[in-house]
Figure 1: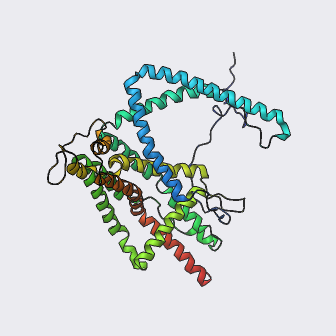
Figure 2 (figure 1 turned 30 degrees about the horizontal axis):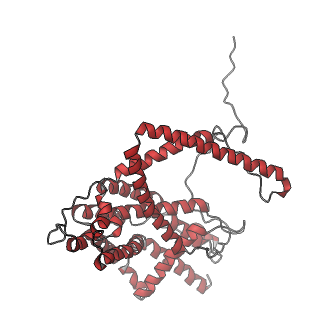
Figure 3 (figure 1 turned 135 degrees about the vertical axis):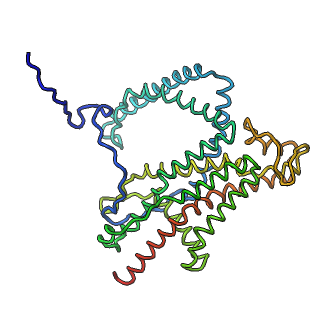
Length: 404
């Protein structure tokens, strides 16, 4: 009996469903200079500052929502019951979404040429499996988050490690993107684009780690108020090390203004830049991917700082003077138990019985710190990279003036 030699089956593109087709090996994005002239990024309908602040508020309020939801799930539902209810709810949600997609496709097909857009693609029946798996996993994640952050120390440790990992992996992407956008200018020769050595866009990881460790340890062993002071001191030391040497390039206010404008330009272009046609420079990362990276960087940093510094509320000195029976020593370091989410509820709980002007002033300080501390910290962490971007732009500007 003869046996045929085993020959691997081969399939052309489109013959097999996407989950079974051979997937090309994913490569790291290569920040090449590309071809074409940079497109002009239009001014967004929502200003950059507004979008960033709305996202930061969503992170802060979303954490509170997760805490409340996790508390409700932990107190009212067992793990097995949660999985069963989540699976059933997910199946119902998946069935509704699948039925809606079919209805939308049938309606578009019936309209034919009158339908203003392309006919939607048919939904995969795998949606009926994905949703029953995703919903219970989401509910379990909420419950685990509640358990994790019940102790501020353990929660902040996890958030800090996640933040460091995200910044180490993706923190250089916005700066690398901006390098290529600057070098894609029509005034830069192709030889210059190809041969110029790129600098690393990764931020000052040592300073970032120092900030996160300070925000973790000082509130845990002293108080939130001293934690805020310590974080500002670390930012000041980072400013002295990374920013003060840059004042040799000009007056201090001009240097700071140039770096702040550069930071704003990096954020805006990384979030919104899109080529208008094939003649404009096309970055290797699509705009949706860049936005996801930007929000991941900002979200992990904000979550870490918000939880470490109790929403930037320096409540202990105010509680020591305003709340009867609140004990603290000469340095305003209290002996108030801050486990079991009391670290999060203490500012409101201790100010609630008798709110005064001083109490409202405490929360006003928290709002000010919420606005100022994260931008200052990220500015100092990225100051060296922003300065190198500005040096690159200045060098190209001088070369253009000389007619090179």
